[in-house]
Image (tube, rainbow, N blue to C red; front, top):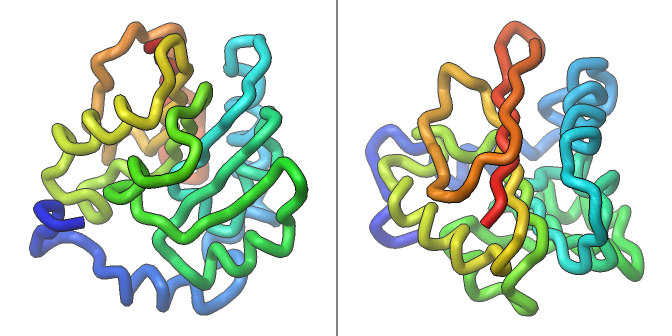
Length: 182
C-alpha cells in the first residue's frame, strides 16, 4: 500500500478493531442492505460470469449472493475475512488482501468486479489514479465493473463505458450504483 498513505486515512488497526465484533455495520439485519444487494443483482448485465471479484467484501454479505462460477471476496480485515470464510464453498473463496495488492491475486483478470463502500478518502486517500490502474489490471477485456458508494462521499469515475447509473436511498444517504463495461 506504499504511496497510498495519507494522514486522513483510516489505519489497518482501526479497521481491524472495527471488525472485532461480528457484523459491525448491521448488514444482516438492515432492510436497506438487503435492498442494496437486490439493486446490485438487478442491475447486473445478464450473462455468464466465470470469475468474479468483490473488493472490500467484509464478512461476505454481498459476496455470498453474487453470481459466478468462481467468486472471490477480498478485504483488508483479517477478522472480517475469517468470519466470511465460514461461508466458503467450491465456488466461493475469501482472502485477506488490500485493493492496493489485489493485482497479485491468483487468476487475474476477472469477468466481473464489484467494489462497494471502499473508494472513500478515508480508505484510499488520494490514490484514485492508482486505483484506476489496479482495477484495469483486475478487470478482463469486456469485463463488467460495478461500483456502489454513498454519493456525497464518492468522487471516482472510471474511464470505461458507463452502462448504467442509478441512485437510491440507503440508510440516511443516497447510494450511487454505476455499471461500467471495459
